[in-house]
Image 1: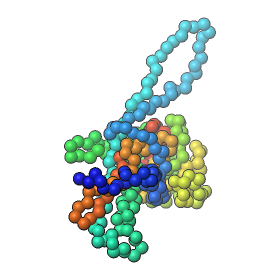
Image 2: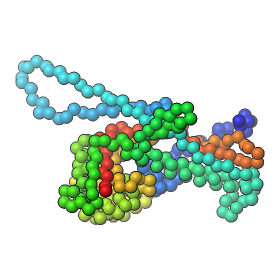
Image 3: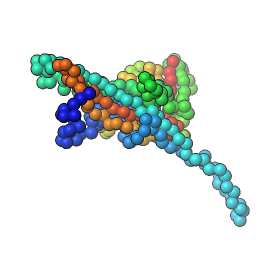
Image 4: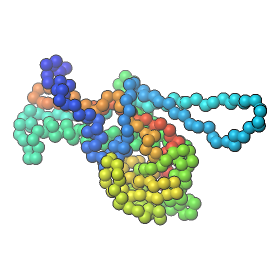
Length: 296
C-alpha cells in the first residue's frame, strides 16, 4: 500500500486537465466512435436512463360536441448498462528511467502515455462491439453492452453478390430509410476496411475526401448522398467484420463513473508502477434511431 506522504497526481493542485478528454483526443482517427461521444455523469455501477417515443400519428378527427375519450398513455421505459473498469499498466525500473533511451526523456512517462493510448483503443473496441454486458461478481469483471448489441429494430442482411433490390447499396439505402422512418437522423456509418471499400463502390458515393468539420473526424471521410441526408462513412479498425453500423450521433453518450486518471501505485523494490484507469459505460438513448446491416 502506498505511503500517505508519497507525492501523487492527487496531491498536485496544478494538474487540472480532464484526463478523459486526453484519452479521447490522443488519436481520434484511431477511435472515431469513442471520440464522437458526448459525456454524461454516471453515479452507479449499473447506469440507468429512460427512453420514450411518441404515439403513431392518426387522423385525429372528432365529432363536435362528443364526450372526451381517453386512452392509456405509454410511459417511459428504463434502460441500463453496466460500467466497465478499464485499466492499463506501466512498470519501469529505476535504472531504466536513468538510462535515457534515444528519443525518450523518461521511460516511465513514455510508458504511461502509451498506456493511455492503448486504453482508448480498448474502450473503442468495447464500445462499438457486440458484447451483451455482464453484471460481474466476486472474481468476475463487469462488462458494458456494446453498441451493436443494442440494435434490434432496424436490422438487415444482404449478400455481397446481391443485385437489384437485394444489392448491398439497395439494402443500405433501405436501412437508412427505416432509421429515418423511426424518427432517427442517420448521419454517420461505421465500417471496417472491407465495408469501406464496399461503400466506396456504391453509385451514390461520388463525393469523396471531404474534410469533416467535427474535430473528432479530422481525417478525410467519404460522403454518401442518400435520399435521407448526407451520411459520413467512417472506417473503424475495431468494427466487427461484415457490419455496416449507421447512427444518429446524439442518441449515444459515454456515461462516466470515474473519469480517466493516472494512479501512482506503490513502489516495489526499484520499480515505478502506474495505472491508467477509467470506469465508464455506453448509453443508448433510443436504439430505433440507428441501424445495422450484416453482409455475407
